[in-house]
Image 1: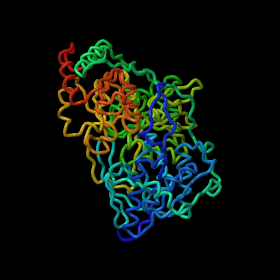
Image 2: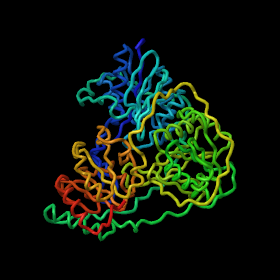
Image 3: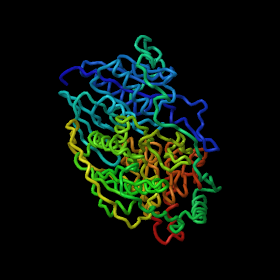
Image 4: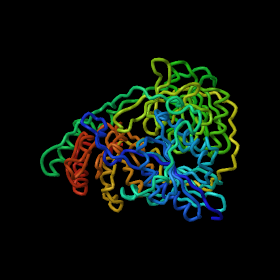
Length: 597
């Protein structure tokens, strides 16, 4: 490093995930739940402190929240930060991510300038991961998302970024913004007595009036959260008496009778609606990501479904190769080739110009790390409402777009609507069905050029898995931290007899035992196999909310009081090392003619 670095870590206070449980009504129980610093933000604090300390610079920590959020700042200062800024005012109540990003932007400009802004990759109480990208856009900064390795030298950042199913090596100039992945650095943690010892003068509190006229809070938000609905499919919670062998035999018999292994029981998807006139006026636009064909097909089908209600056209904005015939069969009426740079901020700049010119009714994008940044930057640049990480979209009674996204418990879906003119939505992979293709050829529009912005340089890309593996699996075996990676080969016979693919909890992927593409839960994938087998996982909501779409759930745990059994159709109390061979044998003797995949 050639000069002192002035860093800022943006942090958020969240409920302690390990203490959250679901009640018998399927709702989240918050009674007596302790609040803590978001786990991803702990990495941002630790890295911001390290960079400032090693360069002889300074580190500031900023949070937006109620007065109680001051404890996050105290912990960060106890871990080495120089000062804290608490952005707190009743006027900020009801802020969506754009209003939050605007308030934080105003605070950073007031207390900056800073060389490097660091924040968590996402928050464990939501999976939008869009506030960092909106901040980067509003601050005019280049961004590296999901950073696993970070070096700063000679005014440039070199980052290795953990994406959905691989890694990207980036170089970008300072000042810049980075979002931190779980294994970037050991987390910043301080005991209560150390937090209490932080001098009061090290924390500054700033209100809405000091940041400007706004509008702030709900008045400055472009999205509205409306009604909620409980997800259908209460689990059967069946358990059987007897030793492990007896339990296994009865569990297999019960699942067989229920149809868990019946391939024919799966319902066929409806066809893609017929096309409408080829135009871009008032369209439902769909941004596709290179190499994500299944996600593109699912989004185009969803777009065609909601567009058909009002006779709107569907426009595919294709960043990868997508022929007019394929695009038309998937639901597009028009396809626009997006050619040039695929760097997120470059694509967002050109896409924002296209949206400003054509004023689409809605813009759908994939809820991948790439799609989240592009969509968030477009929404921030144009001041549009952004509904992130939706699992379904529909046209509401008033003709508006309703986006359904999981509430924190995963047992509830909340309806989110966005203000006009263009509603921006990111859609979670694996949550949308693939509609039956239609016979249609999309019209072709002049291509949309994306000139390189010359700030972010992609040094290398690599894939370590396939993001679609779990989305198409008919059976999935999900493992928790209780199954060490050295024992994964012991699961091979079970995976083989079921024709299943392997999934994992966040703790497993955070430790690097399996790729992030295999993570199921609130900060991972949603899956909808015919059968989900949960092994050595406690069954906390933040994992099993990703299995709500499964036809049946089989839970295996040594603890008869584990929350897992409340979220399973059939439970077996026993050590997975004993249960798995018995289960494999029982399944092999059953009437399964071949793997259920």
